[in-house]
Image (cartoon, rainbow, N blue to C red; front, side):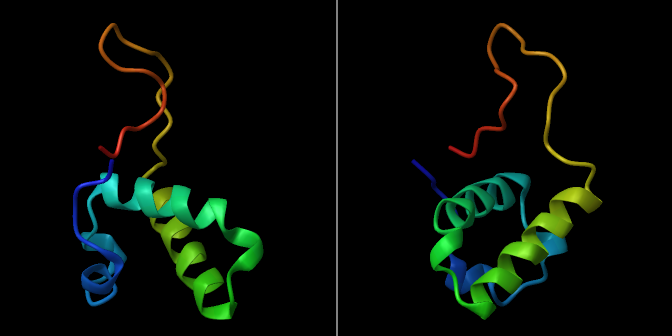
Length: 74
């Protein structure tokens, strides 16, 4: 379960100041509802993707004993 700032609060600050976990959570959420997003939602999702790419992405090359290859936003 996501524990963090909600979209109302995050919409008031630039995406460059979002935590990685916030970007990962909202990217996943928007990805799930992508067919239903209006133009504003698509723009926000694209900005989230651009910020993730600007940070070099989240993919891990190796899993560890305690962590898998997917980022955790819990």
